[in-house]
Length: 386
Image (cartoon, rainbow, N blue to C red; front, side, top):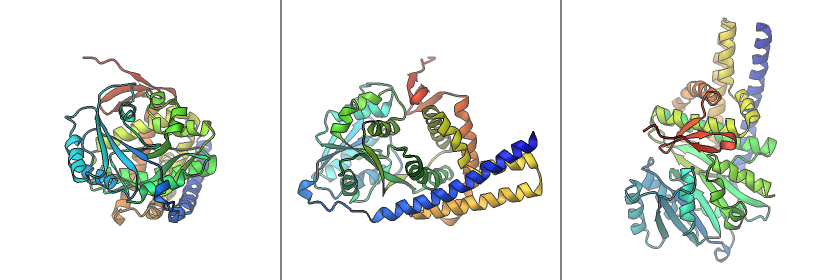
């Protein structure tokens, strides 16, 4: 029996190493497309874009993040900020920037109306009534972009078969232990595997850091209200677009996810929540995902064999994974120091433990809301014990 288990883990480890090679090759191929057109159409023909910025509290470097959107090189856009209350700490930051950039069409929507259980969707729903663009850009407050960002996004959605466009996420700015692990995971695992899923299986993995969609297509989906009780609203937007016959496109244009000072608690909460989303969206995909962590697989094999060969294999796998992550992160022009990659094995082992949690827990804590997650990430409220 033990020998069969060992053979299984050797096979799983082989598959995992093959996955590393595939992700490196595909990421290199995709990022070569970064020389794509940057919106060479005449400015008069560029459509109006409404940029939705749902906010809650002060993200790392919030003012600098938001400033990058005020400085976009695009002829016709508006910025719409959504808050649940004027007492939110981000209110003063937005007001300051709106005064500084008086020529930028800026709206601040303060509304705590809840159309459903997803707090981000509630915010977007309330902002939507004030939008005048024919295209909508959903953009998280902890992101930062280059001036040409909108032109690159609108250029990618110009083809009639394309219904939704997202940019490639890059974690930047980390100074603390947990933030470094977060950015390592974004740059060496999440972004490359968005490319892998699209290239090998045609699955549109949409992450809500930056989503461009036409108002007409969103209306066909039932508007934001159609996603009011789902946690994975970004992923479901991509699936729904594909169901309606449109192509979902992830372009190599980079959107920086600024993570500077993170607590370990925040890291654990975020990745536990993400794990529960993935497990409840597609169980079979989630099970296959366990083959993508060679450090965890080699660690299990070492515990089974308990000999010098297994230990040497584990050390070798760790080195291979560090080299892979450094190479792939380099393709995204990451800002890591060489010594940051020493955290890769610890991060991967921690992620492997968090991978198990969705099989035992269905509760999530998101934006101070305690909820229960079900099939397809559907949310249910949990009554307060107070």
